[in-house]
Structure formats: C-alpha cells, structure tokens
Figure 1 (cartoon, rainbow, N blue to C red):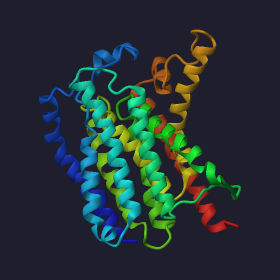
Figure 2 (cartoon, rainbow, N blue to C red):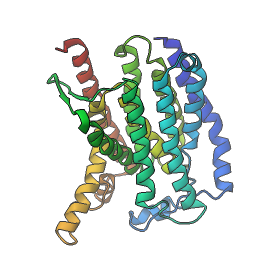
Figure 3 (cartoon, rainbow, N blue to C red):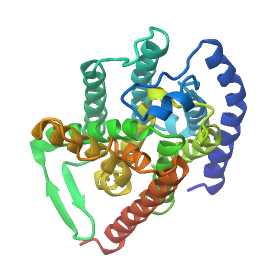
Length: 337
C-alpha cells in the first residue's frame, strides 16, 4: 500500500473542499437553497437554524469523487470494479438526496420526496450494488460474527436479509443528520477505520482504490466540519447524508464485512432504532412517547444537553464502536479458524 498516495488523497481532498466552500456557499445563498425547519422539531431550531444554506454536501462530495478518480485512475484502468461500483453507488444515492433537497428548497415542498419515492430507488440501488459485488465474487453469502469465529451462510436468503439491513443504515445516517456537525463527527471515526483496513487487512494491493476513497472522504469531511460545526454555516442536506450513508455501507461491503456496519456504526444503529421504538411505542400506547423526541439526539437536546456536548459524546461512542469492530477484524485475520 502506498502511504504517500493515501496522504495525498486526504490532503488534496481537504484543500479542494476548503477552496470549494467559499464558492459553493454564496451560490447556495443566491439560489435561496436555505433550510426550512419542520415544526415537529425542537422549537428553538426554527429560530437558530432557519435560513441556513443546505445542499452543502456538495462541498465534500465533489472533492471526494474527483480526488478518488484522479488518484485511482491506474486502478480503474486495471479493472478495479469494486471501486467503480462503490463510486457509482454513492453518487446515485447522493443524486436521490439532491432530488429530495431540490423539491424542498426550489419547489418549496418541505417534506421533499415521499417515503416511497425515496425508498424504492434506494432499495433498487442497494440491490444492484449487492448484486454487482456478488456476481463478481467480491462478497459471499456468509455473515461472519467476530470474536466467536462463526460464519452463518444465508444462501438464497442473503439478499432478503442484506437489502433491508443496508437500507436501514443508509436511512439511519440520514436520520443522524439533525444537529450541527453530528453526522459529520460520528462518521469520521468510521471512515478513518477503513484507511486502517486498507493498510493492514486488505489482501494484496487490490483494495488501494477503496483506501484512496476513504482517505479522500476523510479529508473532505474534515474541511466540511469547519463550516458545519456549531453554529453551522451550512447543512449537508439529504444530498450529503444519503451520499454519506451509501459510503458507510459501501466501505464495509467492499471488504465483505457487514458486521462492521453494525458495530462501527453503533451510533447510526441507536439513532435508527430510537425512531422505530418511538413510533412503535406511540402506536401501541395510543399517543404516549418513549423518548421526549426522536431521533435520540433530540431527546438529549430536550433534556438540556448542548449540541456540542451531544456531538462530542456521540462521536466518542462512534470511535469506541469502530475500535471494537477493528479488533474483531484483527481477531478474524490472525486467529481465524
């Protein structure tokens, strides 16, 4: 693995995102691409966040894709289909998010795409991505459980299990994007983990492109965080959160490590489950709530936690989850039966 290539990807993406932001932000303001706050959120969000430019995910999406493709051109020429499939997948998921944002800010329909209009294309993209990896023998139908050295073969049920599983996490990343810098901070340890994966756990040099992608994403996210940290000057919108959600699952699946999503993505899991529990409890009890508000970051906000505290705690939990997932991978590599 070329260390300098990875450092170049990280630095180039960081600098490009920093250069792009001062151009993109005025453009978003000119187009009046500002955030409209739903009334179901915390009341003070409407006062403090209303009018903040959105669709800011372009600030990290463009550098990530450009740097990845430029620095990995030799890998692409050699036929790195894993990288091409991942780049195509995350780009198309980001496009679904962009369409949702466009409807919100241009068509002035605050809820954007309907649930089915967003669900169906995302499920289709996940199915095509999984199918591509499977037919090219980049993933198997077995699920590895770390620490126990157990492999469970799902056979024909693989797609029935994995498509909704991956959709849940793509959507959970989207749900995590509710406070200044939250999903960016939570995602950084996760993506950084896959630079570690590329250096120490990839087989041969056939995963260089994916490591470059991870490094480029880390660099651009760090630059974006400068503008997205509290008080946020820009929001990533569904454009950024769906791109990021797709990247979260693509990185793990590219290495055939779905367990990493579950452990390293612990905060996405908690955020998504909190919504499911809240909705289920509300229906079962005919109007009672399990949390003060969901997703769960709003519950802690309603309890009096500051946004900075929530982001700090959630990011720390994400980092611990990633360390645990990396240990599971280390155990599999060196103590696998």
